[in-house]
Each structure stands twice: as C-alpha cells, then as structure tokens.
Image (cartoon, rainbow, N blue to C red; front, top):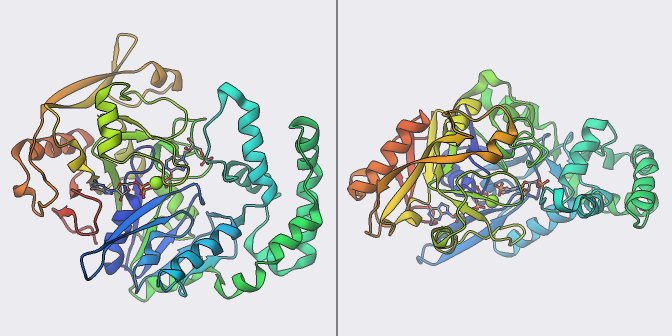
Length: 433
Ligand code: GDP
Ligand code: IMO
Ligand code: MG
C-alpha cells in the first residue's frame, strides 16, 4: 500500500492534528517526520457519552490517540526525552494505550544545553528575534548539520555518549559563558540526565525506516504527518522566520526513510483564514476588529506557548505556493465555521508589491514584507454550519467561498472542517488512496 503525506499549507496550526486523528481509523502507521515539541496539536474526541475530551500533543504523533495505529517518531524528529515521557505518562493517566510507540535510532536528542542556547540566542537577537518556541529546536538541528548532534542510539553506549557530549560542549560552553554570559553546562550532569532515560527508551528504539518499508510491502497504510507547515519550512518558508526542519512533503521522505516513489497522496491542511505565531512577514494580517473576532472565535492562542496567534484573511498566493511545493493532491479546509457572521469575506488573490502585481510568491523575501494583498470580497453567511455534513448543506455563500478558494489554489478541496470535534467535518472526496 502507498504512503500518504499530510502537511500544513500556511504557518502552522491549521488543524493537522485533527485531520490525522480523523484518518487514524483508516491507517496503520502515523509517522512524525520533522520538528519536535515546538508543535502543538489539539485533538478533540467525543466519547461514547457525547462528552468532549481535549488532548494537546506536542512531541507524539497525533495517531497515538487511535487504538490500532502504530505511532512512529521518525529519524527527522528532534526528541526532548523529558517531554516524551511526560507526554506518554499524561496520556497513560487518561487511559490511552501508548505501548505501540516506536522511535527511530537515528532521531536526534534535544540536549539540555540546546534548550538554554535557544532562549539566550533569542534574547541576544533582541529586535531581530525569530520568536521561537524556546524548546531547543534550532540549536539541535544546527548540531545535526554540524555533525556534533546526539542521537537516540548514542544513549546505549555510555562511552560514545560521553565523548559526543564533551565534544559538543567544548565549543558550546565557550559560547554560553563568553558570548551569552550564562553558566557553562557540565558534561557529567548532561550525560547522567540523558542516561536516566535509556532503559525506558530502549524497547521503543528501532530501524523505523526498515519497519515502515516492511509494513508498506505487507499492504499497510502509512501516514506521514508534518509538524509546522510550508511557510515555516527551512528551505521554502519565509526564511529566517521559519523553523529549522523540512516541514514540506519532501521532508516526509528524508525524515522517515520512505522513498518518494511510495507516496501516493499529499494532503495539505489549509485554515479558512490565516494565522501565524512568532515574527516574520504576513501580508493578510489584520490589526482591526475583524482580526480580534477571528482570534476570539477561532480560539487562536498557541497550544505550545499560549501566545495569541496573529490573524488575517485567507491568502491564496500561499495556497498556490503550497500546492506547488508539496504537490498537493487534496486540501482539507479547516475552521470554515469561524468565518460565519462576516458581511464580506475577503480572499487574497495576489499581492501588490510597490505597484507591481504578483500572482506567485515573490522571489525576494523583502517583497513579501512589502506585499499588500489584492482582495476578492465574497459575500458572507450567517447560519451556524457546525451541523453540516454534506457540501450541499452549507449555505450557498459558504459553498461559493470554498469553490473560489479551490479555483485559486489549483487543487481539489476534499474535506471541510466545520468544528473542532472529530466528526465535525464534511468529506467531499475520500482522503485515502
Ligand atoms: P495543528 O498544529 O495543525 O495540529 O493545529 P492546532 O491544534 O495547533 O490548531 C488548530 C485548532 O483548531 C485546534 O484547537 C483544533 O481543535 C481546532 N480545529 C481544527 N479543525 C477545526 C474546525 O474545522 N473548526 C473549528 N472551529 N476548530 C477546528
Ligand atoms: P504546529 O505543528 C505554529 C514557529 C515559532 C517561530 C518559528 C521558529 O503546531 O503547526 P522554533 O521553536 O520551531 O525554532 O520556532 O516557528 N513555530 C510554529 N508556529 N505552529 C507550530 O507547530 C510551530 N512550530 C514552530 O512560533 O515563529
Ligand atoms: Mg499547532
């Protein structure tokens, strides 16, 4: 069976967790292939008694909530071991069976000194800061590229682990003390801390690429779930205001060890409006009452850091870009319900950059900073749409909105989210191959 890739189309928080959870009952493996606990996925599940249960996942793949899925932390992920076990314990305490989780031996570990470095670097950057989540993501990926990273497999050879930590700290302690004016990290303490997790981690560690290959050969379905999103991708995003991993469809292959020829579907999650957390350009950002309404109605506060998310209208320049970069076969538009109650719903169709129209993402980042949106103003709707389960049940203007966006982004909209619950979704086309 083929693999399915699921990515975010904008700047994150599109509702990837909910979409993964929705597919959970139909897939066998869910692989997180990039990022770490900078992600925050909220999944709302209705229990048998109709009671809503809310789960916030950071490091674990959202598939962990589906009883028959094998959740996988792929080689492209950076793992904070304390967070891993806290999250597992938290879920176990709520009765979720987490025993099937497997972790790549090649995944990198977020060492405690990299959490410190993330925070002090941001402080040092001052006005030029990125607005990171402070979880040590950037410094850990930098170590990976610099070839001084610590991998999951290093925990099982104390000698190697010690050598690697000492080597990394040789430079980092100079930085911490002499440049950032903070305390040095003690190699012994770091090694002790990391080793304290080894026994509990050992049974989960695998060659996950090999396991996934075997699973695909045996006819299983594998879902590769991105953290972050297209415009936060280190290569294709609004650099330097990005995360440090490959959050686009290409990253799904390198971050999991599954070859591109296995991927049959690329599903992109697109929020019906746009949000962003942290710094960086955002052409359709709103600073008025409409922005506040989107934030309040859409509950746009970060799952990871609690920061209010910046809010703005739908930007189909970004949507088209996401289609192209990821080879999107299907879009899921989420949170259409949040747009209920606006007289007019603007959709950005192109940018005006210093008097020149851009239908595609400008080549130069500074043009994105100057871009003024060119809007189509579509008529709004007032009806509560959360109970709609077919496209035809949506008010006509809501249908027109979806169809116009579909036309502009150039790939079909296969599902539409009308509420946070697992079943609050309209499926127009099956998301499965
Ligand atoms: P992720 O990081 O892409 O998984 O997204 P987040 O979980 O950070 O943010 C999406 C939020 O929107 C979560 O609180 C979801 O419960 C919620 N959500 C997802 N789909 C819908 C939808 O269709 N309508 C509404 N109202 N909320 C949704
Ligand atoms: P999910 O998976 C939204 C943003 C941060 C910051 C930038 C770099 O929930 O969609 P980092 O800590 O990764 O070095 O921060 O990226 N960012 C996210 N924004 N959703 C996320 O994840 C994010 N993960 C990182 O706010 O601007
Ligand atoms: Mg999120």
